[in-house]
Length: 106
Image 1 (tube, rainbow, N blue to C red):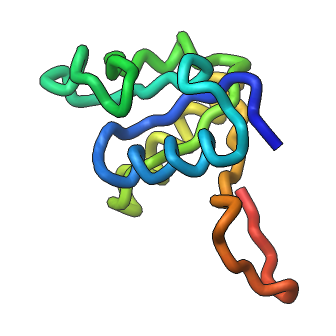
Image 2: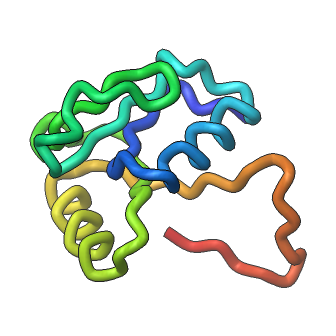
């Protein structure tokens, strides 16, 4: 099922994989925003969209998914975004095999 609008935090290789999963699910690339804390990544094209500099307040009330591998950084950003009122979502690629016994959480 396509997501109407999503904000991805992190602009590396994992973000590209998540963008692919979203597009495979029917989300339009124009409805995917990519954010990074790293100012040097601002403006870089990532699969057809420019990376924006992360400003937590701009994501308040909006749906997000974190595309960062470092667990500590991911946890910190997650906590900060949830405190601002942003809403986390899980993304599973349509071609992924997920056990019927598994539980996917936030």
